[in-house]
Image (cartoon, rainbow, N blue to C red):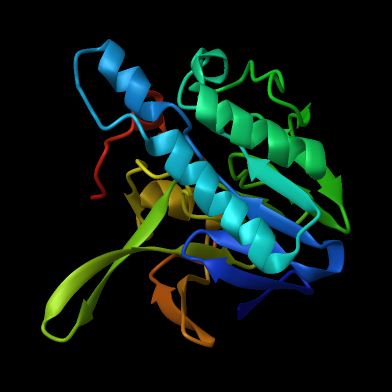
Length: 242
């Protein structure tokens, strides 16, 4: 586990896109986008139909690894409004087993505003507690330090003569944006102006590497932008990273 401090709370990076919160024995993930492959299949773009099973298998493994008794899913849990009802049977069985055994909180996102907890779990628009807000989309004027998803941040890093794109956390004074957890999710550059508009500066991109976090300063201004142009976020997300 790789430690990450935010808003006087200790978290651990336990996977490229998951946090463990020891004080609450909780696992935090964002942007599962379950049933993304079946969504695109309906539009004639055939993808391997195993994304939901792969995503939930990885999530279940992290629950076992950490011993978490609570799971917070920070929005865009399904890729579209019909994804919850469309969840394929084996994935639905696995999900039902986990939600029955754990305290499971679904936070609604822009892709799944009507999520109903069909396979178990509690549905909320946001969660607040311990001096923190957990929500899907970062808000520049949040009154509480917040942890969110939505933007799928990634960073390109140079290593051994080549460039790799890695999922990353974006951390500012008041905001911590999580990378997407889902198997078929794309990404937005961590330094994108849309992310800067919410987080402001100073900020850094963080990936967990071995036993320590590796931090990359982001060139953000010290004040957040007043107006955010997020029109691109209404479009279906790309299946590959930028």
